[in-house]
Amino acid sequence: MEFCMLKLLHPSTELTRTLHVRSKKKMATAAASRRHVVAVPYPGRGHINPMLVVCRQLAAADAGLAVTVVVTEEWHALLAAAGVPATLPDRVRLATIPNVIPSEHVRGADGVGFVEAVHSKMGEPVERLLDQLERRPDAVVVDTYLTWGVAAGAARGIPVCSLWTMPATFFLALYHMDRWPPVDGPEGEEGQSCKSLDQYFPFPVLSSVKCSDIKVFRSLALELPMKRVAQVFSNLSKAQCVLFASVFELESGAINGITQVLPCPIYTVGPSIPHMSLEGNSDKIRRDNYSDWLDAQPKNSVLYVSFGSYISMSSSQLEEVAMGLHESAVRFFWVARDKATTTTLQQISGDKGLVVPWCDQLKVLSHPSIGGFLSHCGWNSTMEAVFAGVPVLASPVGWDQLVNARLVADEWKIGINLREQRREDGIVGRATISAAVTTLMDLADGDSLDMRRRAEELQEASRSAIQEGGSSWRSLRSFVRYLAEGKLNAVETSQ
Image (tube, rainbow, N blue to C red; front, side, top):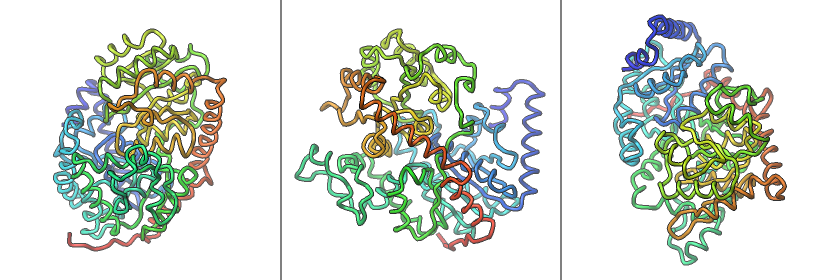
């Protein structure tokens, strides 16, 4: 399947031959390496992207290390379409398993079914691949959400390292879900929105997370996924270490709290930012159909709008966002993912902005004209906003986004949490959105200036973390040294 996809994308015989030569070169380079790591991401864009970043980092930190990244055939084709394999270092290559799970294009129609398919169907082909590799891995790095990941490595005597691609704060909250209070307490919804989870934990590090934020996790619809989450954290006792796609300076309280409860070493290696120069500017934006428009806008005048690649908003909420942008009269740049939605939203929003189906998000956020980000607050998007120094209007839909929005607005103080201003029907109205957009984008507003100052401080912290001598730089090299010296010892299991 993957080769058919490559031929469709690149009909030139010479280019197809070049791809095969490059693949053979990577395999030869990997074979010559002294150490070998297999990386298995959860099959979703928000998990695959940070795993690939970590693999790049590992290869850059250890010249004797080769990495094999395991993805489905569909994801191999999607990555090839985006040109990802050609950009990977020679010692990082992709290996595929069959498409045993629902397609990425339909996973949103049955999220619980997708989780169960990953749990029940993906483990076996990954284990077969591990058994068929010409070279036995020195370690396996698996996404924490893969329930079978730790046991698959341990059963083969291969050390397993778990990669958490979300905030450490959310990890700690889920790790202690047995301490969560009932969601139907006597204080009601309003009282729970002010009540911190801190009072239910042995150490005060979750002050920004409210009891109302966990209500969604207690719903009947999430009963089975939460059962899988509990299984994931139970399995962590067999992992040799846990890697976090976060920055110590951003989540020091949660990270210190995790070191008190996990029996294994932890390493913060974030932010998991796609490869680019630290000096992002308009010249680094590929000359797509939107680059000239951005270049023509005044500095800090444009609100970037994107709600991610998977969890989408209801049509009624999207309409309120579009009308709110129209009423605010603020310039905006909106990525709406599909052409039909793009056309509709452009008509509703008016002529103050541009709606497109795709962009290079980090490079757009780093453009001088961008002054704010209206986001669903997925962790990757949140980290990219921090890395670019852009304040955020948070409009979370579910899962870790609820906690990420709390970090943005309440702990880091670099944005506004729109979820706090929902109506009884759960929708944030256009007038509320318009007012929040106006406040955030007003460069003379005191609150906006404070958020921008804090955003600049966190930008410096996140960039310094991955530069030589920074906290994530040191942590990653400590992990690589740990691996190179053979200090990872697999926990044997028959399960």
